[in-house]
Length: 284
Length: 284
Image (cartoon, rainbow over all chains, first blue to last red; front, side, top):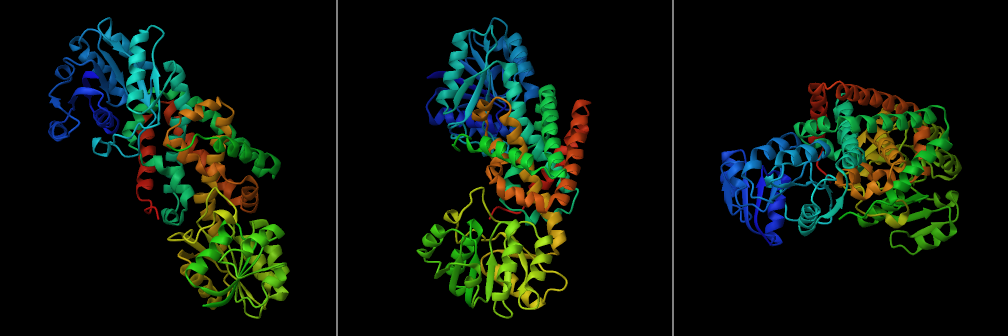
């Protein structure tokens, strides 16, 4: 059991880490820092929060493991802010959706004092905020753990174990490879869904009321927080632009086949999609 | 109550009509014709099927209402096949996903003898076949009813009432307008989901195992039957091509903003999508 788990800036994911850690008895003490004084007051009342701290620096005093749960554009600056206050040998992880920049700058920020091992649980919701958190959020969900080649293996192992104990299925990959993967399986779908909604918003919006489950499901994630996604898209824009461009080429090829009445190609395209989707892992 | 409801070529939708009609006591007698002799044997055992017929012509004898539940490319030919065998004044509807061609040719096929009033319930599933049917499939689902300007108002009213009684929410629109609407809210999402899967199938397919709920939901409909969709895409290719082209323009504009680091435009795009999605009707 961890003597002290500290969570910085919990939203949906960070608070779910706290809930899951408490439910699974992973930490003797859970300390939380949140930027807002009102949020700190509310968190102090939760059974999965043993103490709130007024600053990140005081929150990490005595912590064996720190989870930085802030948006991707604030993770590195929080790592820098806490670096000098961490116990020697402490381990720091995060939940950011983009990893390459954070993995390198996070490790640099902590220097020799502590270990930064980035993580990205593939769990979440179009709903944000700690109020929507759940002890079961990570259950059977993949969680990327993204050490550098220079990361101490014991630190990586500790972070892998932590996410495993929270219920997730850890997958260790290099940060750059992570960013390529999520550009395809997470960021591209987000852009397609948001673009579909932005496009339909310009047509007759009453059409929305006639939609079946197909449009509902394909666009669910378009309800996600634009500011949160802005930072993700910014940090991973190179990989994303490549994925969008290749997707556009695939869509244009389909469009061409349909325009030319080449239904053999149309059906082949649909079939390739069907086969891929059929072998999807079962829903958790 | 209808003295006799006849359903031709039931799959998921047609069998759900039969189940819902029986559950809601809408017809004294339900007669079904299916192309396959084995399917007819299996259907004859169902409590929502009072008789099976060996041919479409005999199935419609004595029918007050006929539902042609075949794929879109077979609806008109079935209408022609049964025309001379329908009772005078009978009403024929269908469940096809494309309406303009079917509405005109269906009405022409029946001539003065009977009334063709096309319909398209926005219910379904990536699963097909009568075995997946459900009496609740149409519950609170929109159902387009697409009369021509020349259709007898009483026939339209009867078809509207029928779908209403099955649990659906009928919406009367002109067939051509229907096709424009579904090109946007149904056919375009299908193409985007299939194309996303076809594209990801060409990358490392193990990435699929790391996906969260976002990719799962955005691609669910890609598991749909390619042959079924081929006929839908073929019948509505003009409206669909227009919608795909306009979607491509929207996606290119987003791509350009991201490439240029114009995050004001990026966020505006995400926000427009979010607002549209937020006002979606609640799930049934």
